[in-house]
Image (spheres, rainbow, N blue to C red):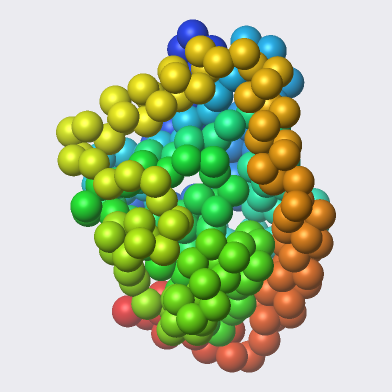
Amino acid sequence: MSHVVVESQPHIRVIRIARPEKKNALTAAMYADMAAALTAAADDTAARVVVITGAPGMFTAGNDLFDFLQHPPTGEDSAVFAFLRAIATCPKPVIAAVDGVAIGIGTTLLLHCDLVVATPNAKFAMPFTKLALTAEGGSSLLVPLTAGYQRASEWLLTGDTFGAEAALAAGMINRVVAPEALEATAMELAATIASRPPEAVQATKRLLRQATRGDVMATIVREAGVFLERLASDEARAAFTAFLNK
């Protein structure tokens, strides 16, 4: 059974994280499926906009730590990095709809989306230092650019949780809407963008991303190198053991 459900609507491709029994925690197989879905949408002329969402009350709790330790990323060919490349380079607009937890990569993947809609229940966190790890997904570049250095330092150094209003004030999300309106709002935005001439839309996205595209990809690679070093450290092993024993 796939925990990533892909739905095709007129000119809109929906990628739904569907593992609610595990708070939508992501496995290597799920990263591979999401990367494949993004690549397929990029190559399909019928798909003009991509929407990524989860389940009511949970976007994603981030990495499934048991799967992560059993199948740790070993390099740039790992599934998680394939997913990051796919979302960072997707030529079509990507919209995220977030309710509940958006932890770790659940927050950092949003930095590569073009619009983000969230509910008041959304909880964001990049708790990498709590596990003796470091920033990933281009977050060490994109969070300061988006939210400013001081907020980025607080969120990335402490790893503490912040809410939808803080994310909105920092420019990390576009709108906060009621939970019952979340998916409809995201789909309305997608339909509006999909109704525009697609070549003009994609050219506009290229222009918006052009100034940072090279730096983002270089940062993802640089962060991955440090992240993998940290993953093999005694400090990380102790932090993971303590977390899993809770």
